[in-house]
Length: 384
Image 1 (cartoon, helix red, strand yellow):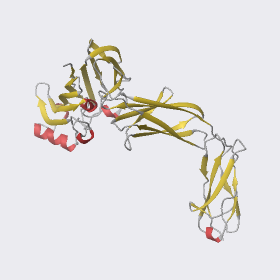
Image 2 (tube, one colour; image 1 turned 90 degrees about the vertical axis):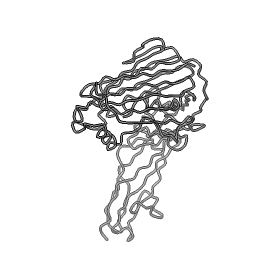
Image 3 (cartoon, rainbow, N blue to C red; image 1 turned 30 degrees about the horizontal axis):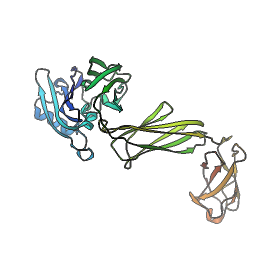
């Protein structure tokens, strides 16, 4: 049986934490191995025994690097974690023995969410990405301890396939082996492309829809919604053309949502790519949709003209939408609630408005344009 051997070694400095991992993954996607997190003893001056180190771990809610058992497919991942020490290197250790399916790799490569590897497979092409860590809090000291400022990781992966192009700090060791290193100064992504053999997986399907809304400044806020045909664990990355808009976790079952603000008017091609957590058994899927946004233009923000006195007449000022053929609907509000019959461009204050706040909601519409709703600032009715 072909196997993947993951052997991660760590650079251990007095000022830094270190992460080391050793995993074996069979060609069927089952995983077993060990992840060890080390902290220099010199950084923990009040810790002199393994028992005291265990108390530090407990007080910091240090997690197991395995996912939630209930959320993962069979075989369910399990972890056995324990504190320890390395007297030769002068480190306190936190070691977890792990077993499960391929989905544990994202967590197994990082107890503290630092230096995570992302796996993106399409057909028999696997791209492993170690994302940049420069400026990220994820790779910082997980305990906020004096003397512990950095996280150093080195991960070596041997795969049942051929290692091709590598970028960044990734290094090709031999035809089947690639190595990744990282610390807080990694300024760009590192990647490795591997041609796998013997992969048999299940197709997934993805549907992308958009819900745009116009903003007063002429920009557009777009809600991007990607829905899986069959729910599965993973992430969806959204794009505007080739520009990534970000990653989204699954919300409702099989649904991923992202809000893209500040989108410009004109043509856009939005894309969504689903990357399954169980990349060994499930194919990734994609969808895209093209839209062309047209928005209204204004010379200024609308306001209410008039005085806050019962019997006086209020009207809308400073509101000239372009194009001028737009349809405009008004609804006057009393303390943010609709006033019956208050649907004209002007409104006469009544006794019911005394000591209340009056504003107006304006809706602008036109065929092929995004509708726009604005609400004026309120005025107080202080005089009878």
